Amino acid sequence: MEVMKAIITGASSSLGQVLSKRLVAHNWQVVPWERGAYPAGDWEIGTAFLESEEPQAIFHLAFAAESTGLEDESWLVNVEWTRWLASQAAELEALFIFTSSVMVWTDAATGPFIPENDTDAVEGYGYEKRQAELAALEANPDTVITRLGWQIGHTAGGRHMLDHIEKQIAEHGKLSASQAWYPACSFLEDTAAALLRLAAMPGDVYLLDANERWNYFEIAQALKELHNKDWLIESDGDFIYDQRMLDPRSQMPALSRRLPLHKP
Image 1 (cartoon, rainbow, N blue to C red):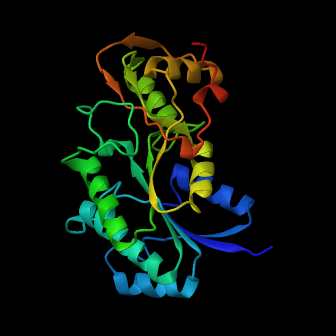
Image 2: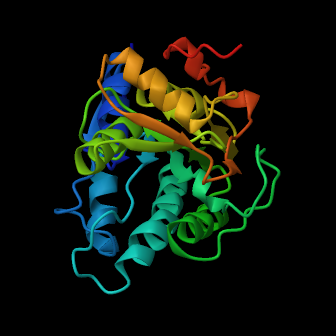
């Protein structure tokens, strides 16, 4: 069986680690993009790296999480690097899969969202993801853009829902969870499976969300039960927002397949 090679930016992230394992299990060779050796903005050394590796796919998960002191670093990493990677993938005839975010919509928009809905973020992370999508498609119309919601892991550590809850409990002794917020979210392993599945799809925008109808309070309570935690979770209605995304092409399994969610 032929071994395919994938380069992953953000390979050390929670999602990157799960995706790497998924790819290896499906007979892919995974090469992490080491930003220390190949920094965003140094296009010459980046080009040499890509040409030496000759990947069949580039999964672009990385974003500007922490500043390293570069000028306009957030825009450089989130937008210009995405544009450049998309163009390089086109030249290499490699698949290009870019992970965007549900935050291209603000809470002033009305969900559930579908791919045809106009995005509205005009500042911050959501705006940069929005601009990165446009830049990627302009540079490479075959780009597969995947808008992700809040990821759910199984252990503390990483930028995902369970880790956030653990930190809130540690800091405040409780979690206040809105019953009026329906967050876009999915488990890391289901997101990774969808990314691999969608890699071979035509260039387009795909929405990855496993939340059919559950509010944040219900999801937090289900995570508490699943992991046998003693969390104190209080319900409120302070944040009112339906953030869910609908896209049957992504074939995301419902949260209720992994969580003890009891609402019919």
